[in-house]
Amino acid sequence: MEFKTRHTSIKGLNKELSQDAFGIYEDDNLFIAVIADGLGSCMSSRIGARLICDAIISTLKNKSNYSESIVSDFEHNWLISLSNNGILPIEACTTFSALWVSKKARVCYVAKVGDSPLAIRMQNEVELFESEKDFLNETDCFGGKNWKYRFQAFTIKDSFDFIIASDGIGDEIDWTYTNNLFDFMKEKFYNKNNRSFSCSINNAFGKSNNDDKTIIIGWL
Image (tube, rainbow, N blue to C red; front, side):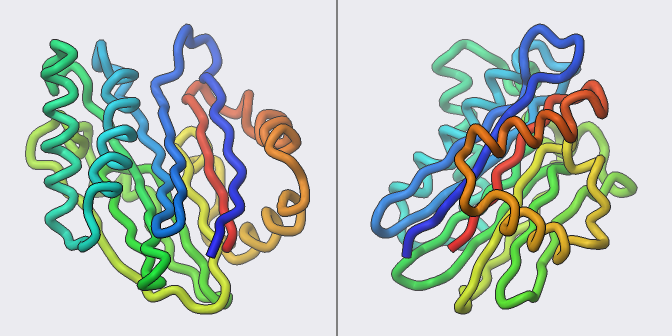
């Protein structure tokens, strides 16, 4: 079991630095993909986003059993990293969407805090974890108060695709047609290199809004 991925991250228009971060990790037993979107109103959100990606990957590499409590483990390790860097959580608020696969068990896990959409497809059956802007507010993030999370596990069938995006791209996509989007991405980019993917995403979304734009797509 080996994943093929494409990814890119585009700094928002008129921004000096991107506040998005992402991470991809794979070994013989585990695959991880995560995108974090730092809140623009926080002075160290760029660092917060980077550190939560690192914390998620580090946490998962050191565990073999996964349950909902792992989301609290993510936060705990993120808080330690912030403290080691002399940063307060309120200064580094960030959302994240993460997907990881236990290859031996053939189980995919999804965890997210905030509004960055994530979708998976198995044998043309789509599960969508999209932006819930009617229910979310600025505090629904690590570093905020009373954050909410989503966690779910799926047994992987014969075929598997996924998409994770920060809301700079997610807000531009009509997720009603997610199955068609999966078909398009696979047909267009499966046999292309990552540079081609990055150029295409930049051309399609680079000037669509002022947000940072990060996306990871993958196939099994």
